[in-house]
Length: 361
Image 1 (cartoon, rainbow, N blue to C red):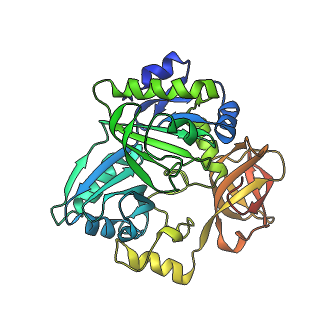
Image 2 (image 1 turned 120 degrees about the vertical axis):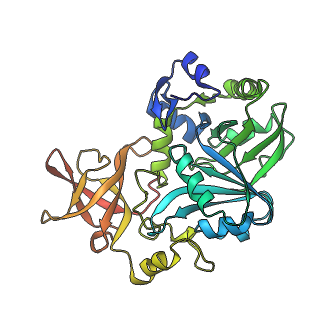
Image 3 (image 1 turned 60 degrees about the vertical axis):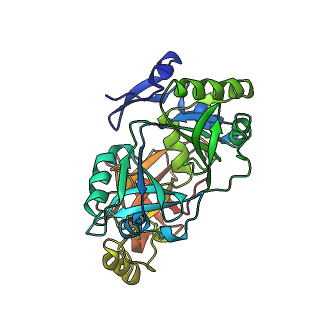
């Protein structure tokens, strides 16, 4: 397994470690519920250095991004970011990603999922017919996400950059915790607010940043958080996880990602995706709240009252903020309306659930 710059620190803190996307990652420290509530109510720090980062530079960078992503990156200016996806030739999703505009029309950073780094790099490279300068900086880039309603205020103590003024999906670049050329963004995936801190792992900078964050954060109750709580946090907000809720077979329209799919430009498989929007998707990603006792899990089937299979669970958990079991599922469109009763098959028994609007909390 690969290690991040912070692996030994997680072990020293007593984290439960496990393999994730080829990396030795902290799953939990003191327990999912405690960590989840720490982020929702105060602040927590996640090591997400396993994520991938690509730099695309040169006069053709924007054109390449426009051709391979679904969102309209021409709307981006310096210091702005957007959520997008990479459609494949069949209208499925190679990956979902973030596009950061470092310098308009000249320099962009793409942030991709850890499990898809190689696949995404090959896909984008295949479409790089204009000689765009590409750099895979994943291995040398450290990334910490400090999330929660108080996280930004705590991190403001470590920089002269205006972090408290950062709007959602914007970023700034400067000195943070005594380290230069740090990107700090407001693009978190917990729905709890906070910042993400990107910097090059060199000359002991990882140790410096980690120590400084805990120096100002610990007296205020900042906690280290594992990937298990990250999953419950994102699920409560209805955020998709690649490999669970979206994959190479998923059309962005049926996944509820029409808002990042702009037909004002040409991109891979645009006609297929546009046809899905025009004709209507046959299935739809919806939220489910369990009415009867049971927790929906990835891969469980969903039935209607007559016992007909109408869908499948993609993600599910006992939601710490709600005290209820929730899930996301692809459901046949005819049964996907809010308020519809459905039945999740758990141990060969149909457990009642209801289709609800997301986010859950």
